[in-house]
Length: 112
Image 1 (cartoon, rainbow, N blue to C red):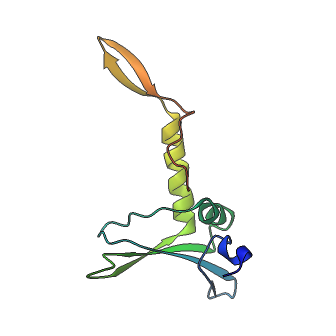
Image 2 (cartoon, rainbow, N blue to C red):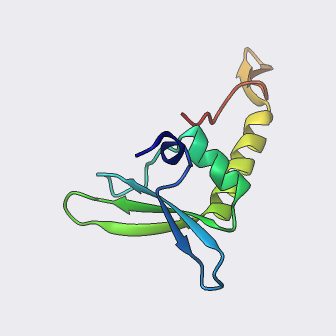
């Protein structure tokens, strides 16, 4: 694989039914839960092309493979909600005084 291909942010380029490009990132997990990680390039490509990007996740890949197709727009929306929640202070009570233990400056999601 050439250097430009290695960092393009997806594994497969296909076509949508209307002929526009379709970018597919493939991930697999031994677990029945789709527990995956996206690289910076993969995540950035999804952000830049949410309507044309998809993550195909194969769960329980070893014994009973199941395919989950996650549209890029769903990943983009989910990450926006996670980042929003990370920006909200979380309070805990210490001797009757509520103190924040999480600020918006802390990173909740940092793709590799």
